[in-house]
Amino acid sequence: MNFKISKKYPRLEHSETPFSPGLDPMVPMLLVAAAVGVIGSLAVELFRTAMYMIVNFYASQEHLVAAARSLPLWARVATPAGAGVICGLAMWAGHRWIRRPRGPEYMEAVHVGDGVLPLGPNLVRTGSSLLGVSGGITIGREGTMIQFASLASSLLGRIFHADESHRRLIVACGAAAGFAAAYRAPIAGTLFVAEIILGGLALREISAVLVAAVISLLTTQAFFASGPLYIAHAVPRIGFNDLFDVTLVGVAAGLFGPVFLWLLHTSNRRYQALFTFLPVRMGVAGLAIGLLSVVRPEVWGNGVSVMQSFLSTHWALSAVMSVFLLRLIAVTFASAAGIPGGVLTPTLVTGAALGLLIGQTMLIPSADHSQTLWILVGAGSLLAATTHAPAMSALMVFETTHNYHVVLAALPACVIASVVGSLLRHQSVYTEALGLEEHGPAASAAARRTILPKARPFHLRSSIVAVNDVEEKRAA
Image 1: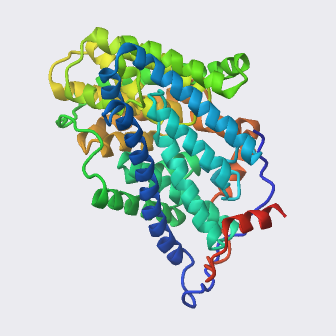
Image 2: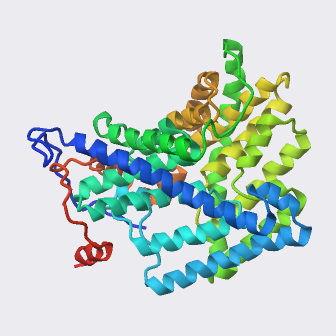
Image 3: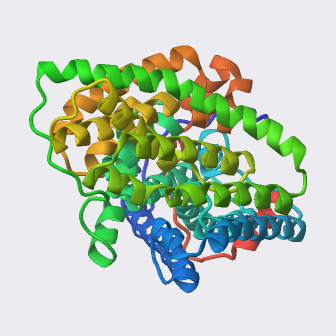
């Protein structure tokens, strides 16, 4: 990918809006952000419900690890393999039908694009990901959920003829809303957009992103699910004596994070060179995941149920080690095959296993709350080492468990892991996905300066036009 920053966007001035003379242009943007929050929550829940229906159809279970355990061994192997083939066929057929291999993802649309997510390629991606993750492929479904929410928000901006700069902010709001609904973490979702997509925190414009994330979570809690994503033992107050433990975990995660990224990057390049036909490439990856799940059914899926099991039950050291290694191999296969999804949740689970391994081998495994601390600090630290976003990573382990004292331990560990990881590998998992290493520091800085809307006031036209008409005008 070779995106070029070819234009500068005019700065947002305090001029009149169509709603009220002299009204700050960010005020109507907050109303739009609230609507995006509702839409993002509905998009995430639609994807999640569809996945549960598919899993329940062949295994009478909602969660993938439980589904894997309920199947005979031959079906445990065949299901991910078949899902990989079907996912590849859907992508191959979809690309031939729409004659467009791919469109920009939400990060590209916000960071270096014009805020437009084409409908066809993204629907193909979403449908293919749904088929893959429903069959037990070891990839994060949350990445597709965020992409789907961003697509819905992009369509909203195009339907109402938002200008280019505001379309980008609307898509950023959609990404935060999807993140908040998927993880029930609105603050982490806002920081995800601020630290990773935007590359910095602009308090004035980020207020719209925060509104979208909060409204998304409120919608999810009101209609679909409430409470934290994970149930964990309460962690007591953190003292100075705990800093050594969390520092050790942070350093270990900082050292392992670049290795994890190198493994994903190298395997992707080499594996795709072996299998050029998508159904074969993804089918082989699914077969490998199925064979690994014969040893440990916890290989299936993004790892949400594995994370909950780490937090609520005692795990023997050998079991933790086997799950750590097997899931690492499985995630590598799924990512190398190009199966659509994300690696954020698999990274969290891998980090949780790493923290548990360190706790059981190098620290004193005393109480349940100590293991909870190591698990959560390990999860946040590895996420920080791979994303280079320590604030988002630390807040995420707090919001997903509502365990406040974890923040005091996770923040220093995440900062240490991020610093160590960035020193060993300058590019994060998301900057590599965006191809920003091709621009150099100057281009990346220019992208960050122009990412937020600095344009004329936001105008909503009274007439709604078809999306296809908008695409035809854009192409012309």
